[in-house]
Image (cartoon, helix red, strand yellow):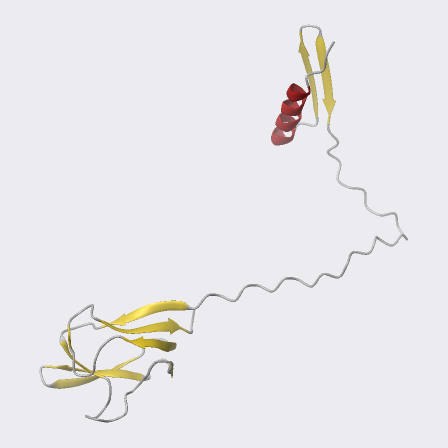
Amino acid sequence: MTVDLERITILMDRMHALGIAELEYTHGDEHVRLVRDTSPPASPAPGTVPAATPDVPPSPLPAPAPTSCTITATMHGQFYASPTPGGAPFVTAGSVVAQGQPLYILEVMKTLTRVEAEFPCTIVAILCENGQAVEPGTELFTVERRDA
């Protein structure tokens, strides 16, 4: 009788996949009995010292990637980057902004509205020119959220 190693390997893989501990297989004059050890590894005897494992520091968890998003205009109007004509802008690229801090002024029908940050962030880029007409969806700032 010749042993078909491929068939035995297939049977062993199938036993493992199904969680079977013992299998008897008969085909013609061929008879195979496979037994798999499913007992858990032995625990060390009381009073013995387990083998030392090298001290491997736990790998640090990767820092979460900054969440980049775009702040857009919510309505039609004029975008103003500073509180006064010729004044310093509320924010510049690289500014760290707290929630509630002014970002820009939007003029709508001669009414000036100061728009504040809805979440803490860092300004990555200013995408709109001072005095530019904007409409809903116009991209104004690219920011990285700091609260995520």
